Amino acid sequence: MKAFAAALAATAVVLAARAFLGPFDHPFGMHSPMNAEGIFALLFVALLLLRANEAELAHGAPANRRARWLPAGLAALVILAFCRYLAFPLLADDYSHISHARNFNRHAFAALFTVPADDRFFRPAAYLSYALDAPWAGLSPIAWRTSNVFIHIANTLLVYSLCRKLKFCPAGAFFGALLFGIHASRPEAVTWVAARFDLLAVFFGLICILFMLSGWRVAAVLAMLLAAMSKESAYVIPLLAAAIFWYQRRGWREIARLTAPLFLAATAVFLYRWQLLGGIGGYQSAADGVPTVFKFRLASSLKALFPRFWATLLFPINWTGELSIVLACCFAAALAALVYLAWKGANRRPLLLGFLFATICSLPVHQFLSIGPDLEKARVLYFASIGLAIMFAAINSQKSSWIAAGIFLLFHFAALQHNLEIWKRTGYLAAATCRAGADLMRRPLLVIGLPNVIDGVYFLHTGYPDCVEQQSGRRPESILADDDSRSTSARRVQIWNAQTRKLEER
Image 1 (cartoon, rainbow, N blue to C red):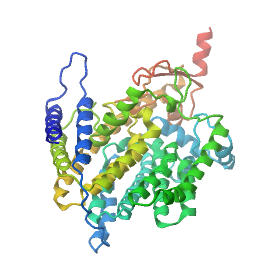
Image 2: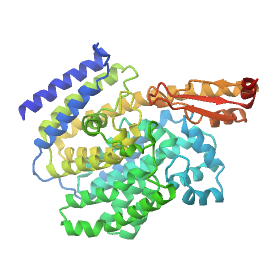
Image 3: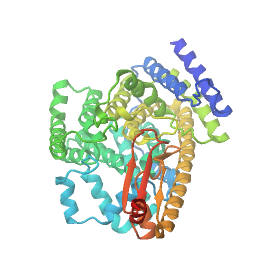
Image 4: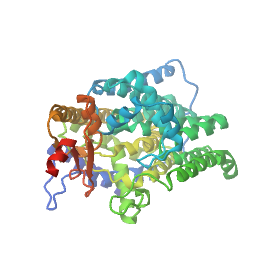
């Protein structure tokens, strides 16, 4: 065990040096610290579980007057974390979703449930939420992002409620929920309007679990249906409920009886979706058209599920931007805090619950977990980060851990600001690109080489026609997409108007 601790401390020193000194030269051009982060993450989780004990948690006594202000404190801190980054321009699919929402009518409502979507997804609940926001939000980035932030705040409060239901003390539940609320991977899930699917799946999923814990089974089934119609990651909710009942030491027969309605509801939605879409749907491989969920290669999938997944859960830093001295100091302090927390240990059962929760949530998105230094697709961590929140709620149910936990939270707040700044910068670049296209709509127009991603932020590979239309009042005639490469820097989109095509024909 001491060898684990020594290796963990040594890896922490390497990572801290990377933060202060910049990228190390490597003969193969590997400048990112993701591999070192993965080693640290695996050692941390292993040591944490090995050092776990069977001591009772700090009992979850009824909240006193001071503790009753904790939910308000959570909401205020989440607002503080995001309030400076609500006004930057929209990005990528934001324009398409908003355009469709503004044209929503009763015929579109029926089509959500009866017509296969072009994107091969079945997410009517999320599209309805866009339609409800469209009349008052218009084209305002602030309005659309504010709606997302409020859903995120609701989810943060639901995580707090779940931690209290699991009998964590108020302080422990507060630390866990706050980690969920200000987790540095949040720019993609919260400030990208097009990622609302993740927010709603977690919202209805947590409501479903809390209803089950309260004995409201019919309401839980309805919430399960709404979650499954928000995003496919919600299909794991019955397994999550079973894990929580295991944590409560219920018998396997009772667990099967309690979760059976949820499994039936999830199965019903899945079968209807299969019939509607003519298959499982979802993202398709550009090479062979096979759904990416079936792309499971043992070595790469295991690497994604363990070192890379836990590395990005613990250290979601966008390494495409230079770290400020403040963030570098917070990162180094967080590494030291995690070494201390791993050695100190915590109650084994809630730690295992958090580990199981995160692992179960990672299964539907396993094909996207090889997240790189730019944090592209970090939204898939949104559901799984509840598992990390549960683990830290368990750790922080011990008063001697509060300072170390506070340091780790400070790191996430600083990293979140760093990552949001990159999203803001790319948002203004996208707006300038759209304005340039709108200004040129009076003449033959050919736009080539719009990237899908810049520094981990989705750019204008999708959404460009809607963006130009909103800027100019005119829509480019057609789109030809070049998807011959999965590289985010190599994806290209070609937008031709009618005049350009006529010139070519000549």
